[in-house]
Image 1 (cartoon, rainbow, N blue to C red):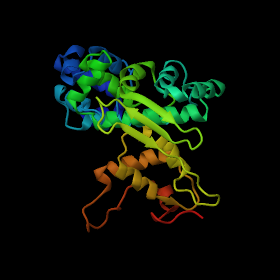
Image 2 (cartoon, helix red, strand yellow):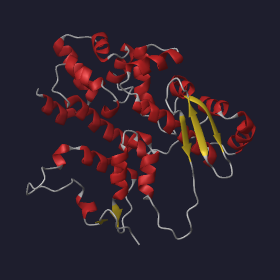
Image 3 (cartoon, rainbow, N blue to C red):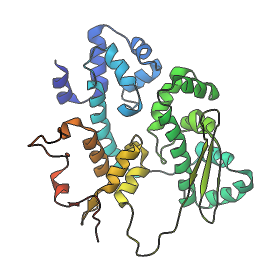
Image 4 (cartoon, rainbow, N blue to C red):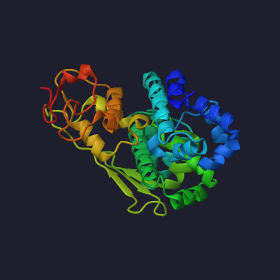
Length: 321
């Protein structure tokens, strides 16, 4: 069966990989070696215990595609389609509170002079506003650093050494860490990334200015500062609520570039309020070359978008009143 026919029929990356392994007479161990990941990860991917990682965050699809003799880029397209379906289900599920190992790690990294006060607030309001804010910004800092060094083998090996893992184990852990959001940070992610990456953090509990210090061995210019300012009453919102939720959900927006975020921020709406999933789909539309044509070529829309949004949207600088 041709790849395109299989894609339309099942849209399941694990089934496609298993079929190709059988056709080529290869085993999971061969595929793990080609992708430079653990055999356990390949086994969990094929048994659907692990979701396929985001194509933009890894070179695994290039390596697997070459080993399985698949057309270039086709495996990544299939993975993206499957992830989109799974993300729709995930967005609809109510998130649970973050406690346990991650909370203990975050408190341990807090500046000594602030630790007791922050601990009291965390314990009084389990995963309340302060704990969510701190956790989100620490996660943003660590994931931002990980994305910057995604293809840096030397950096990955150093991070692996600091967390006591092999290079292959670290590549697997990185895929899962970049898919984490503030509601789903595993103990494994804390050990592999947050612990070695985050040196310390401190917060001004009056102004809510937060400073995160990264491990200088892993990050140059290792401080990240997040300042929060008051907006006067009646001031028009600078960001759509749906876009704010989209940016806060790293499973949807984790690989968005600064330019792409600015594009999404510039979109205006007269009456309808788009949800996070709309912005995720708009981001995929923006990245798809099939939605664009050469300058001056007639007969093609300048950007792909859903018909329902077309009549409601305003120009980039026009906002709802």
